[in-house]
Length: 218
Image 1 (cartoon, rainbow, N blue to C red):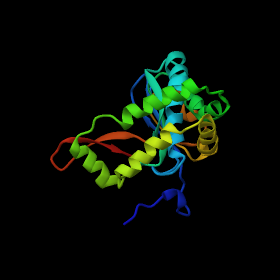
Image 2: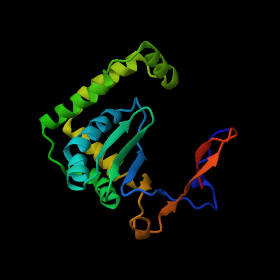
Image 3: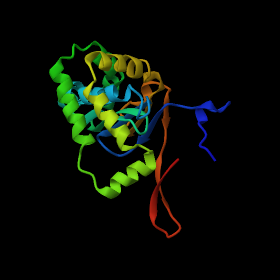
Image 4: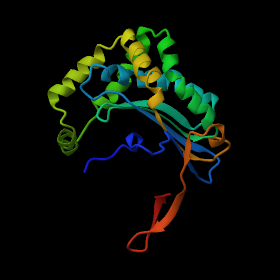
């Protein structure tokens, strides 16, 4: 049976932000939004955009200025998702604001060719990373991505221009942020009191059939 998107079920209340209170002094945050599949022409610009945001903006704002241990962005072509994250973050409210405005920042940034080249090198470190035969076969089996499709993606990545990055930022981040899903684990610190959009979920310990403790969500 296919999964049901409860946001489309009449009479249901669906919140796009979920908070899991934990007894920590810091928080772990994630934001994701739908974009395009692997073979879509915008998939390559989004991959480059994720690296540009991570190294030119988010790392500086979230880690160096905000005090988090780390933060950045990623693009998952196989899943059709673009995401942001921060971890061991003492100020998740600030990080979420920075993330929400990241698309506008990237759209308005005057990128230079060196920025694009550095981002492409970073992406290709993952694209052409050594891979075992079994991993390669499993990826192909699960995703259906062929060698020809991989080569086409390499060519698309090399061809990404400044205008492609700007267009992707506007269309998928600025235009798509309203569809983003947010999850935060950690200290409350007034996070959920700022709006009624948060669904607060409790993590509890339960036992499986063998009497071993497992985490459950209520």
